[in-house]
Image (cartoon, rainbow, N blue to C red; front, side, top):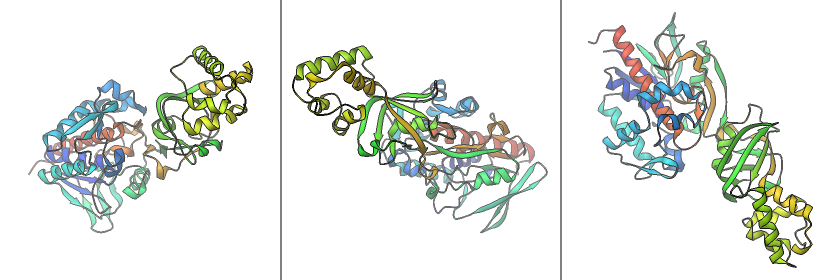
Length: 417
């Protein structure tokens, strides 16, 4: 029976182990933490947004970097395959807003429990607290892994599913990327993706904790629009976050400082409609101060701060507001400017951008183009997506494909017995 060795016990590694074992391999899973699936526990704020109930093309539209690379993996094991796997193994799921899929219990532990049960079912050997220090090679073959605790572990095929460098407390410490680089693979610098955005302006900190719904955030460099999305955004002590802030961060350049952001607070109104609304409100308010009218236009903290951001006195009587001042208010409501100072550290990022170059991985098998029996899966690869269950599904899909491929290739090289 061929031996498949998997390094990394996260989402991709666990799924790779299940599929390799189902395909007839003897599988050993090495994890340097004290438990499997540490990062799964914190996804979806502990509820585990495990996938997204959409078709392949819709899924690929949410992948920021190298979406077409995932075509084979998603065809092999897509979102509905994952939902079915959970359902058939005692973990019912529910589809919520934005087609986000969660375990019906809304407990991430139920997902890891189901996967752990599958590992037991298929006879996978799991070694926790085992640190892989490197891979032993001979020409273009990987012979196995060197470990700090158990010495050399031989294998007919090896899958690296060690994650990126986001949330290092969960075990994603970049070890796999270092191993890949040492083997001669091109590794694009790991950077934060799906993380908060620090602004050059200080005023967002004054709105800390304020969440805006149904607003549009746009990021531009010169005349080029990098991102524009409608949804929910959160002001923080450093700048902005929330779904829109996180999503925008994926699209910023590697050196993001200076990128222009604009916030449309009234995306449902055209410039003309908003101007008519302001005219009407100010006319009806008469001698009432602008500060007293703003809460009818914008939420709490934003209403109090907004006139100053526009350079208009808050104590002006509405009947005294000039056309120029009204235009300042209107323009700011439709395109309130901010400037990117930096992205928050990768330790706070949901996922890692960068990793092993897809040019050096066969998308149909997830096999290395440099080594005949080395495979990659999950966040180690240079593929990342928006929030909504897409990144976890990438881990499930690439893990499943790499596991099945590694087992199949190993079967061909070594007779079962």
